[in-house]
Image (cartoon, rainbow, N blue to C red; front, top):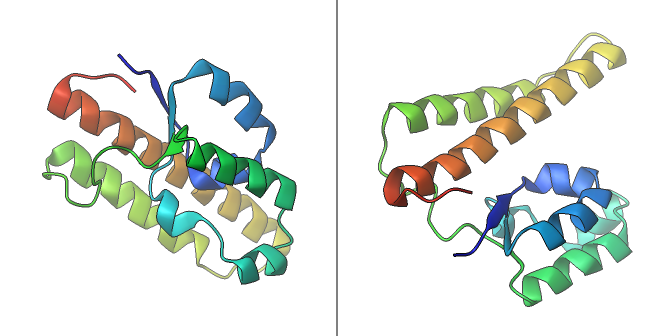
Length: 137
């Protein structure tokens, strides 16, 4: 049985060293909404992203190590758990888009919202295989 690990795009991109730890530990690295998240060439320049790190991520995708989860999160049959997690994701997305009075408050609230988003998305991604196939991720 394959052992999948789950990590959000934001967390993986924000902490490149995690890649070195996760790849040997799992058969697959599931990144929810990977295809929507990978930056375009313009965004790579605009955000000043580490091209070497992005090249490593692209290689892992080509080798099928870093993949989308093998199910459609958005098409999953809704239940109370999914509704709650989707609500948490939506709330975190709204929080990240707000404007605050100070840079410090924006940084604190933005980091909190990013953490909440990452945790809810990871939980949602782990919940679906458990609910539908009694498989752990």
